[in-house]
Amino acid sequence: MSIQVLAPQVVSKIAAGEVIERPASVVKELIENALDAHATSVTVEIQNGGVNRIVVTDNGTGIPSGDVGLAFVCHATSKITSLDDLERIATLGFRGEALSSIAAVADIELLTQAEDEPAGSYLVIKDEKVIGKEKRSRSRGTTITMNRLFRTVPARLKFLKSPATESSHVTTLLMQYALAFPDVRFSLSIDGRRTLQTPGNGSLRDTIAEVHNSEIARHLREVQSTEGDIAISGLVSPSHLSRTNRNYISVFVNHRWIRSVMLARAIEDAYQGMLMVGRHPIAVINIILPAGDVDVNVHPTKSDVRFRDGGGVFSAVQKAIRKVVGDAPLPSVSHTTIPSPHVFSEPVEISTTPLFSHPTADLKEAESGSLTTLPILRVVGQLSSSYILAEGPEGLYLIDQHAAHERVLFEKILKQRTERNIDVQGLLEPMTIEISHEQDNVMKANGDFLSQFGFTVEPFGDRTYLLRTVPALLSNTNLVEAVGMFLDELANEKSMANQGERIAISLACHSAVRAGQSLSTEEMRALVRSLEESSQPRTCPHGRPTMIHLSSHRLQREFGRTG
Image (tube, rainbow, N blue to C red; front, side):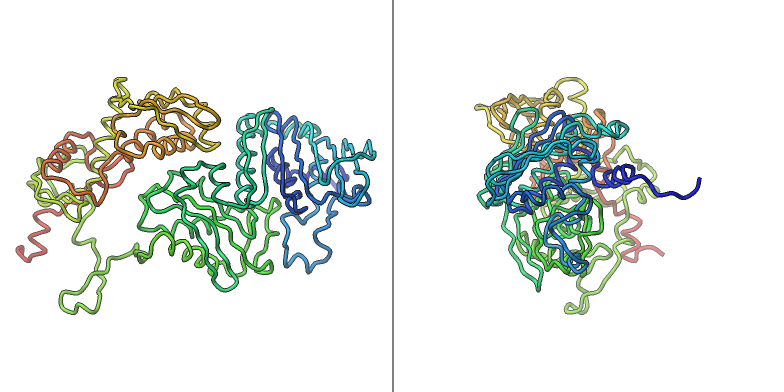
């Protein structure tokens, strides 16, 4: 086929495909336009996941009547005028693609009025053409209505998920922009039911209380730090408050919501040594830096950015959060540094590999050892209130009390669930729990599944539930945090079979004794006996070792007792 210039309609559909992936993409572009227009109130209404209808209303500056005709022309924008402006983008939108891309894949109605004009403008656009235009009045601001998304490209509809899933994407988007702009009042209605309403009072903590829940918001710590031209602000969780996924980490650069692996890593690195493996912090962080030091034009949807000094931004974020959550030094992952027995002022680096072997390596040396059995062990004592020292026929065993208890509880929970005989603890008074919007969707879909593990939960208002019974293992723990954690597990695990196992793991982890908890000799003996009876005693449910084995042969060799 010879080279030819594509027809304008084909070009517009291709361009729209880069920008408009799903209903949430439409909402994103319209919200950004509203915020760029200095709106203090943004209302979003969607029907059928946003496929049938999306309405975004704001109280921003509006579009002057003389500019309305240009608003839907491709690459027409009021936000940049020259190539130099691309070097210092200060607005959320700037490409001039949003409205033209939406008009290429849906029917559009626009009603807008600027503050100093006697009347507003009303436009109807179909198949990328204006088919109706008249004067209409409204208060200052803009309302854009999108109908029948992907009507002209029905093949794209096949790639959309269920209305519930598409609605959840829109909900997540609204929540993120509410966190980025706490001084803006956001409202979301799905199929006629209001599901989100933020206060817009400028308080990030109040916004988090609405987006997540008030219990989370109450415990978060404030971050305020400036390093050179980089200012870091926001709220983060203390080390004792964490989640099983990264859904509670929100990062903004100059109030732009981005998905940055680098910045998420910087946040999590600040907690290094403070959180268990598989746990993640809660963080809402806004990074302010000169517009010329960040390139926001590296992705069609503007969901990622590039920094002039990425290392400097990474370090600034890490330091700012570390200062709030703890000043402990960052541990090395490659070696252990201990004082020399001869020169105490000079630390020396020694490998721990020759001394403490991986449990499976020692099993090859032990004649009677296996992955599924333990020899009879005699408890000697406790080290650092975290490890049980036990003597066996093949040497010394250092048992991680938390990991060991996790294994014991995990197998107990699975057995009880299989036998439909979960130990349940009734609460003397029902406990009221408030959960996030995403958790609420999970609760509505999986309430019966939670009951299999001993939870009895009843609706008690918007995103509020009454907790009447819990698994007996949880009777002495933070029940609000525990329920939230289990809902997060259900949200992340797609397979129902895996969901049950993940809930059992979380329940065991939440109920197990902690590192730093002193145990009596009888408690240690009981734990070791239970571990000996487990089917997989040498690993916790996460796959980490429950113990380190220092064999008799190795002890003799280290003390020079072998030839």
